Length: 242
Image (tube, rainbow, N blue to C red; front, side, top):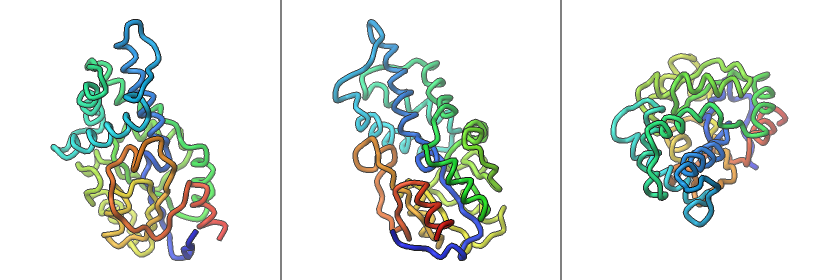
């Protein structure tokens, strides 16, 4: 594991879903729950079409397509994503099920190492969130994270989705902390590491094992983080215990 000088930074910014929160677990569970209701009788789903890799690949492609059409709230993005990916997986979700899928974000679990790592990092640094989400959905997630973030920037606040750069620009303006003193930490090369690196931020790629193939629930991308680690516990070790 490469090293960064912990004293170079005042602010750590994080992507949330995929980095701090196990969104792949949340996505696959919620999709299977919606699909199971269309079976006669309802029951568990099996077979290649229902393995994690297939669900996450369908999600990654569909969510990105929906986000690039025009700005919608993330609730709308998720509802429309399920409506479009359902037939690809062999079922036609109802509008109510699409809304339930969007609301499931509040139930997506933090990774087991997230909360302790955030507490350790928060004792030394200012902490920020830059997330492709709505304010109310992150508010529900924030209760699960048990951390008082200094600044939170959402897609709802900037009217766009990463990899567009408005999240990072808004965070820099709010915090007043220069890019050279900010470290961005994220799982997605596509949504986070590539745009943050292009803007001149130092970056840490949290390369968690995916339930899917390739890049899992995110589109693939080429990017060069400063450091790659397997989890948030390693981020804390890198910056607090160095």
